[in-house]
Amino acid sequence: MKKVDLVGVGMTVFGKHPDKTGRDLLLEAVRETVSHVDMGIDIKKDVKALFIGYFTPELYEHQGHIGALAAEWLGLSGIPAFRTESACASSSAAFATGYWAVASGMYDLVMVGGVEKMTGLNTAGVTDALSIAADNIYELPTGITFPGLFALMAQEYFEKYHVTWDDLQAIPIKNHHNGALNPRAQFRSEILDIAEKTGNKIGVKFKDEMTFLKSPSNPAVTYPIRLFDCCPISDGAAVAVLASGDISKNFTDKPLHVEGIGLGTDTITLSGRKDLTSSKAIVNAARAAYQMAGVKPEEIDTAEVHDCFTINEAIITEDLGFFGRGEGLKAAKEGRTALSGDKPVNTDGGLKCKGHPVGATGIGMIHEIWLQLRGEAGERQVKGNPEIGLTCNVGGSNASAVVLIFKR
Amino acid sequence: MMMVKDYLDGLKNGRIPGSRCKRCGNVMFPLKPVCSDCGSFDLNELQSKGKGVVRSCTVIYAAPVRLKDSAPYVVGLIKLEEGASIMGRIIGTDPDHPDDIKAGTKVKFEPLKQGDEIVVAFRPQQ
Ligand SMILES: [Zn+2]
Image 1 (tube, rainbow over the protein chains, first blue to last red):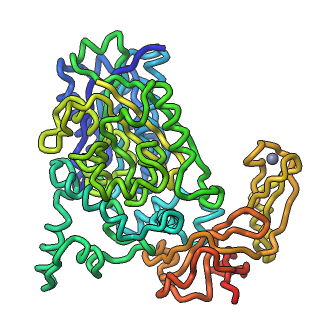
Image 2 (image 1 turned 180 degrees about the vertical axis):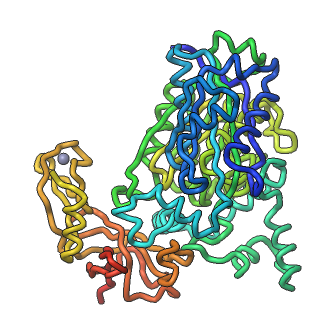
Image 3 (image 1 turned 45 degrees about the vertical axis):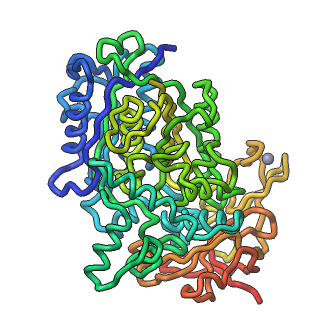
């Protein structure tokens, strides 16, 4: 197998882009990516194949056949191109496909990306579109929604580990702190600042974050999940270039080496799982990635994990082996996952603040690891020259997962 | 070979169809066509008696478009007496008091008509 290196990555700002379609966002991310390849790249000459993640273009843009469409829009018509779909892990699936394509020796350089243009639908429409990542015969007829599936996990977690919703709030508070430092994030405010602004509008003074988070200004979505436990609806795209280790030096002196890659699945039905506080998809993906990289969980310097709902950051940091069972929330409360902690998690604000354009999220995570390991993360740079970074991107209710380990 | 139709037909007739592996005894609800433990295709159909306990439950305030007039409502994961879990609506409880339904609350299957379809639902037992 060939070694595979990441030689460039770029993303749009995640958020609302009312004037742009999915293909416009993708092109914008490609232009960003090209500008981030240290020694330049001629995509027309260098890119041998293109893999694009997009979860539900049929529902958002009444568009299929994304591979050929993207190739044409990027001026690359002629090369192999197709779409990958694994719900919210669609762009990590594109990355994995690109990895296999280069590692096999079949292509020496490929472009992988992801996009989702969501805000053209209203909240109810998006809720319906997202719901098809769950089982449409066995579970959706009950009226369950995605926030509902994660609420069921949260309830089982609370019951099992004797914690409450209050304990969970360390996670959104931390992620808002990080997001405030990220110019590409959808929400760039501390929760305290949002509380003050909201308070001024309605004539209430919130004395701290918890008073605000427990108020009607943070409405219930599905018990016990409230609005600030949920990631927003976003538009955005992210793109990466993968090159064979034989040629990566032609593009940059500072590539990130893809050291470990692991994938897995769990049952799509929650009813099929014996334990809702863990995911077989994540555990299996992590085990494979650690083994391939020859790295232990304690050696990871910084990680990006899929906090689509706040409870999931706790679950994933446990499934990745960063913390013991039931200790993920405690670690967040103690500041261990903060920028200044011993295991910084979601330094870009996570899905909660950076935004979650579903098909773009996985490569959006890789973008942050790229910045952190190259020492280019600015105000939110993790101290101590981080060397090893990890991303954990999941599909749906953690029914599919991709774990990637990068070294500089 | 078991198909989705077997599940839907069973549900229409007020039953919860499941399956049991002839090789390893694994019990699956709702029915699965292949054993999730040992991979065997050799399964028997099994009907649930419809009794179980709540594992986890939630109140849906923000409902899908087709159910927006029904919200808020309660959905839970029920562990059946036969040994596997199934998701269902929980009826006969007040969505405004979500803590009334705790893990371990005994419930009984009661099919719920929702438009043209029958939905898996359970009612708490005294
Ligand atoms: Zn079996």
